[in-house]
Image (tube, rainbow, N blue to C red):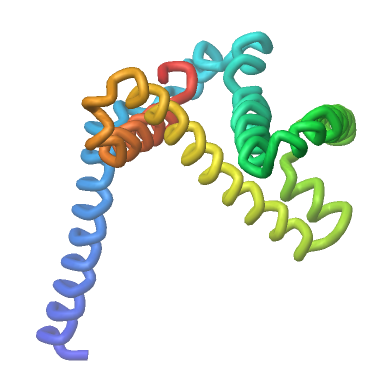
Length: 191
């Protein structure tokens, strides 16, 4: 190899490394500005939730599903006719049975996987790769829909109290989703 080609090769390698470093550095700076500095491992313990805090925060998924679903079921029954309202009690029983099944499933999962195991891990280990992937995809869809339904219901409540704000409800929904996203990226305890 000639000395010119060695220098050219060295220059290309160095410029590639510096470009990669510059991109990584800019990403770190932007992330630090948007989310704050990362937590030190020693400080993570201070940001963990107690069982009561975790119950209040993480049970909102099940509560929002029950609250909004029940309202929509009754709305459909009212639209169907007053005779269909007789179905509200059997539907409420079915919902209560489903909640008992979900609670029992959580209980079994906690005892079967004491170090932690989500739907993907449990389904993958017990049923195989494809059921695990289906469980993971279902959770992603659930997370997106939970945020969408919760934000939409909150904005609908606000705009019903203040009708003059109803023109900007889509923008309010987008702003609320951005705030929830930022809060979750920053950390649950601080949000």
